[in-house]
Amino acid sequence: MTKFMDVHHGMVGITDEQLREAHAADLAIQEEEGVAFERAWADPDDGVVYCLSEAPDAEAVQRIHQRAGHPADEIHRVPLTV
Amino acid sequence: MTKFMDVHHGMVGITDEQLREAHAADLAIQEEEGVAFERAWADPDDGVVYCLSEAPDAEAVQRIHQRAGHPADEIHRVPLTV
Image (cartoon, rainbow over all chains, first blue to last red; front, side, top):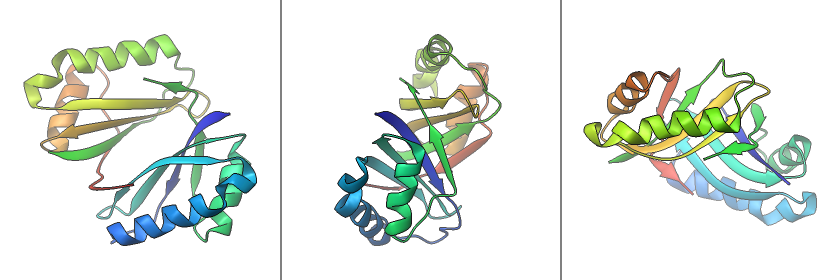
């Protein structure tokens, strides 16, 4: 398992409720790909959302996001953390 | 205090030690601007570093990063979190 940070653009105006619903949609199916989404942060002004997860690989992260209806624009493996 | 996610590009090949040193350099002076850096994640392959902080504003985050020798390329206010 490796940590991943994925990024969604074009989310200008996202609300707290929308972020929670999107996160819940990921959590509902994440086990099917062995993914564990940990946190998400949203900037509604610039329309950027960051999601932190642990997953077998980036493709597994993307499959969950795609099935939940919000594919990521970038997925970065972030093995280094402080 | 608001949460911020800042992003550094061009960090290809960053090592765990370099990430820790950069983070420590921020922590050493962050109180002077009322900033609290919480976590950082690095992707050495794509050369991207994400830093999560709480701060009075984005300018305070940038002043600490600049003084520590690594100005951010993007600073996003992320008031929404899950």
